Image 1: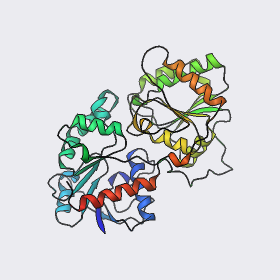
Image 2: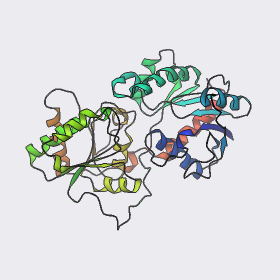
Image 3: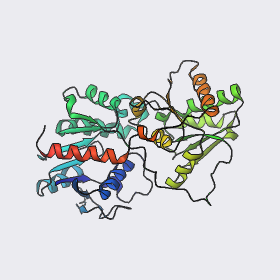
Image 4: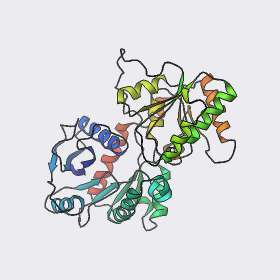
Length: 363
């Protein structure tokens, strides 16, 4: 049995889980279903993980003036035995000799720093290269992120960067309450994600405008996700948008509401400038909703009926191409084969296999 220590701070006290927190929560959920593969020990400064009371957590108390990640965590690891340490969020503790794995979810801070918070760029630019030097293996969610890692850190050997897709089936067992109405009563197009520059939602408004003017469809546009940062450009576009009355901004929605939105949408739209994987697109596919995505993240790694990959260049005409494809999918929605989609069970199994590999001394 391989004993794995995982930094689970991201999950401490969080109720609204997105991105990295969802990735970790799904791994832990699969671990609870099958404990035969590894023995997992969470490390945090909080005593429990909301919703995962079955996961053992060792509390490493915070001390005023003493950095938790760079001092307290390494001190604990040097004085306790674990076979592998997994840093699931871009970073690894320094001065620890045990085998280590780090997950790098994307390289937006490196490729497109203008789309990332300045303090996040500064932090990751310091921590990620250090993690690359410390790690026995680097987990990434797509081939695009693998290529970014190898460009960013040419000293890293390609065999040490392991592509493990995220699962599409996180919400497969969640059925929305029949008494809970869909917040949008008309046919609609959907995007789920934080309102931030990287998501390219101004382009989506242009596409929607083209669709209405070219095809005269009855559909509305639903944007579900928290209000993010540096998004003044989007809000200006929205305030002056000609068809503003047909755009619904729902804010952060629960998992149950998300399932209902996926199941009711005509088409899911993801025009992001950059995604590490693009979880929303794959979850929408799982729930039978066809997807149009920009060529980034996991969309480039899968050839699936119902997943269309289209350009998002700033040249005139791309919004018309998207509008044409939306109209085509609205008229003839394809059947999506679940067998072709990645699952969280398989994601976890690949993680567990990597834990075993690294614990046996493979560098």
